[in-house]
Amino acid sequence: MTVSLRNDRVAVEILPLGATLHSFSVRQPDGSWRNIVLSRPDITAFESSYLGATVGRLANRVGGARLRIAGTEYQLEPNEGANQLHGGPGGFAEQVWEIASSSDSQAVLRLTSPDGAQGYPGTMRVTAVFSLLPDGAQVTYTATTDAPTVVNLTTHPYFILGDGTIEDHVVTVPASTFTPTDDALIPTGEIRPTDGTALDLRDGRLLGEAIAAARAEGLARQGGIDQSFVVDGEGMREHVRLAGPAGTLVVRSDAPAVQLYTAEHLGRTGLAIEPQDFPDAPNHPDFPPVDLLPGQTYTTTTQWLID
Image (cartoon, rainbow, N blue to C red; front, side):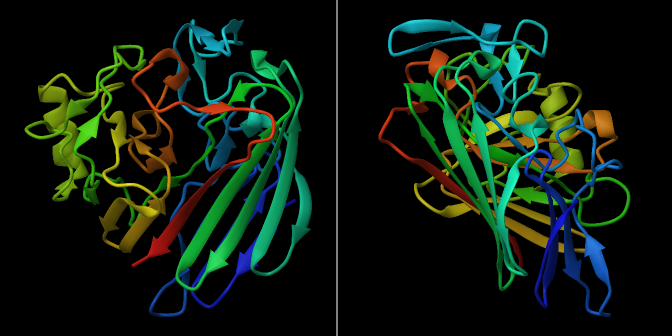
């Protein structure tokens, strides 16, 4: 089952499995439609590449699958060696979300994550609202809890604006700093300037060139770029501008950081763009906290705009 949203400019399909952005089609000048995200071949099965899925409770990686919340240490369920990735096995990307409501322009999906799921404390109630905009679409996540816990939600779409690979795409990221990682992609805790490195994408750079430079400088991971950038500024702002042969995509969000992944295991046929909080934040006191307490409401919004 899919939920379809459409206006004159874009057409979006949402899957209840994983609250997934399954397709994002843009009307071309000749009236045809082009899907600019990678879509899973089987809409009834979990996709291990997280194609378009909502990931949580904690997006990205947690080192040692351990963290401390309100003075108590929790052992999470690992799913990437000793570490946890994107909420662990059975995380939000693998759950069937309830369709609370839908129309031609908006879909509201809900999920309840019980206390102890994937090792996390507290029952968490999450809402994902996918909405069309005149020139794109957006998702707003909200979450509440009945006990102290942590949360970092994002959508995991892979974008491609052309045919073939993303190496001929120009990517711009207004980020003066990034969070270096070890070989297991766990942040070291440092916040390093991008200036003078292959990861300085503030003026735009061909992805193929950026990947080659990252390899030469020892900043490549898994053969390409898999990196969290600290986006300059605060509030809703531009995170990434991606220009390809078929057009330009602008990703805006209120999140403090954005993960870029050049999808080496998929042959660089898409670029994952994931606005989110810092990876492994609970284990690094200098990173912005991702705690959620009873009585609080977590909220974050990401927009995908066709320029």
